Each structure stands twice: as C-alpha cells, then as structure tokens.
Length: 461
Image (cartoon, rainbow, N blue to C red; front, side, top):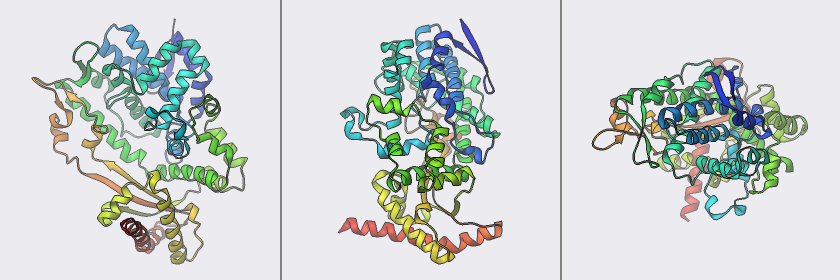
C-alpha cells in the first residue's frame, strides 16, 4: 500500500507503508517542532518550515536519485529512502544552532576511541537510529545498523552513500529548493530533474562512484551556483547570523553564568541511553518555554526574551579579516573553535569597555558577541570540503571544477572572510547607524588587534 503527501516543493510525495510507520514514531514527529532555519523567520517571515518537512523532501529526492541511478535494485532504493528519512533525527532545538553547544558540553571522555573525532550531533543520530525501540521494532536491528553506517562511517557502498551524504546529495538538493520557497527568494532554484539526468555511476559493481556525465556539466554548474547564492543571501544574512549567535550565547550564559543544570544536561552528550531519551523530549517550543518563560530573571532568559520580542543586538562593526595583520587574521579565522573561547570572551570584554566609554553608556560584556566567518569561493564550495565530484570523461575522469569553463575561471583561493561585532546598541535612523559605526570602528579594531597580539606575545614567551 502506498500513501501520498502533498508537498509545496515537490508536489505529491509517495510513501511506502513502512515509511509511514517510521514517520509516525515520536522520534520523527518531534522534528515537526524543530525549525529548519532557526529564527530566520525574523527576517524571512515565511521561513517557518521544519526538519520534518525537510525529511519528507529528502526522502523523495533520494528516491528519485536512487531510481535514476540504481534502476530496479529495490532493496538498495528502500535503504537509501529510509536513511534519507532519518538523516536529521538527531537535530536539537533550532537545528544547527545546537551543534556548537553539543560540541562545547559533550563528555568526550565517555566516547570510544573511534568516536572522539566525530561530530556529536552525528553520534546522537546514530545512537537514536540504533536504539530507539520504535525504529528497531519497525526496521529491525540489522537495518537500523545499516542505516546508521550509511549516514555515518562504515558503509562500503560509495554509490549509496553519495546519494544521502556527498557533494550532490539529496539533503542539499531539497534544502536549496525548500529554503528558497519558504524564504520567498529565487536564489536556490535549480533544475533538479535535469541534474538527476546528468549523473551517472561509474566503476565496478558494488564499488561504483557517483559522477557527472560529460553533457551534464551545465546542470551541475546551476546547482553549485544556487548553493553559493543561497548561502551568501540567506544563510549569511546579517539578521540570521545575529539570531543564531544570540541563541548560542543564551545557552552559554545559561550553563556557565546561571548554572541551569537542565540546560547543561540537554547538551552534555555522554553516549548513554538516558541522554538520548531525554534529548528526544526537546524541541524549539519547549526550549523557549523552559529557558525563557520558566527561567525568568536569568541571563539566558534575558537574551531569549530579546529574540521573542525581536529586540535584536545590532551589528556595530563589520570588516574583512584581510584588513587585520597577518597573525591577527589567522587567530580570527579560528575564533569559533573551543580552544579560543577564553580569548574570544576576553576580546568581547575589552570591546564592551571601549564601547561603553566611546558611546557613554553601559554596554554589558555578556551581550557583546564577536563573530568571524568565511564564505568560500563558489568553486571551492562546489568541491564540498575537498571531496569533489568527477566528470566521467575518457580516458580518465576529471574534477568538475577543471572541466567546467565557468568554474575553472574562478580563483578557488578567493574567500570572503568577515569579522563582525553585535552589541546592545540602539539607533533610530540610518544616518545615526552609520555615525555610530564610524565612531566605534577604530576602537573595536584596536581592541581586537591588541588582544590577539597579546596572546601571540604570551605564546612566544
């Protein structure tokens, strides 16, 4: 028996009976309460879609790709579809915003040696898939294990893995189209059906690799450009960046300043069944209620209340990382890593003091956020972290970025590396905003450089 679900992106999505049973499990239904783009709806009001919607879309796209590439291998197609459906099951409140907190507070000493370098949210997904009683009952232990390996490490079939996790995977294809649709922008649109027709599997049986047909380069160019444009225009929109950083800061303040044990326990992954059972009880709404409404008076709640009322921090400083001295630039590129958390806190405190003096108002250091990020060139982004896709040319396959005339003309070394500061500063007009930014630009630059150089000097002693 087959079921149909009406989807605003892909029209009707057809589901098998066992897939519907998976969707009806509490672990999957929880994803209805987890937003796909965190609080991006504060700038794109339509961006209220969820990880559940996305999971349905990825299942559909993975099925289309598998049917196109694998033909009548029903067992493989079913495995790919189920893996696609479960690929986001380990997401926490506000999706990707939770990942930094999981990395910060996880108990890595509890992990096995081979797990210590893996991303925590991926370990959580694998744990849920392997141990959730409903999923094990529906799929069986063997299938659950195969799906966990396909989504992580250990599955030996490159073709299947490429469909659910790779440069051209179903996940990216769906979120580009879905996020574009719900944000009301055209940046992530591409011809998904032509892209599928442009792909091929090459190699010996059971060892095939996903490649691009020689005539399919232009379809992949369109897809890669869509990914680049949506990243630069939506995922890196200043309001999206600020809201993500505010949620992350609220969590840090709640754990490290307020001492909220329940918040710490939410992110302190220890690889146990008890953690996973508790984790599966959380979504966006419960998070906001528990740590904003029920925790009124805490530093954490004050930041979350700002988000609820759209009283956001303002971007008071934005500068290219290349404008800083070479050694300082290198530090800023790594500022988001845990090894630099103390330096980042120190810089934010110095900036808060400088802003307080310059603007003659009390700027709270906890609400000053220093953020650095990189937008890679479209050519580098198309390689998807150096894992590149090959074009099936004769006599030997060649990298897509070399075959594509468009991408070969782009300097892969180019990247937009930015440093920004968000703070609780108010302005009423555009002119006032520009004046304040000009006024504080030099003092913030000096504060960042001074702290970074002091760290370097200390390391040399």
